[in-house]
Length: 275
Image (cartoon, rainbow, N blue to C red; front, side):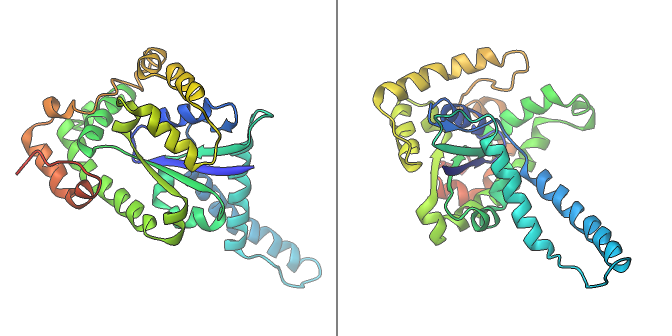
């Protein structure tokens, strides 16, 4: 069974990409996980369990314990991730994946534990992310408006955070593993006129067999209009636009994002609005 990971900065389109991948009959890619929580649980468990077996050792044969926290962390983490990947996978599945935005900060760690797994990163304009994230927070965080929750605050936080994520992605891109196993897609390409070609490239990277008919069916079943309609109650998929920032961000916030994220914006082909 071949394994893969999907990730991107928050509100970059990872959920949309995950749904496209999961729609393939040979692929199992469940909704978003949060592997940082798994790591925290294991790290908390290790010293507690170590203390338990040390106590047993003192009261029994006093042979000394055999417990390497890093060894346990790696193997326990692998077990959790594989359980998530295989959970409810259909019998026809040949590829299993996991979608988690936080893994973009731990790519070398993930790669060391899963040396044969492939990676798909999705990149989106940080200015558009700021707008999307603001509306998401307004919808889901009741105290957000009262805590000075303005679009300007979100925009000025997104710039440096996005730049940090993108730099880690670029660093991994230059490693032997990154050059061999990483594919970077763009949000604009997955919703644009040539999305069928882009989805072909993604499946090809994963070595998942696909033809024009199947790609067309997957895109039809998961069109942004369909997805938005399905999620209209919670508004998670809001508009799918790539240019709403032009009308919603004030020039000062655009400048702040572009200043903080300039290097990676240029690297990934985003034009500056501010001169």
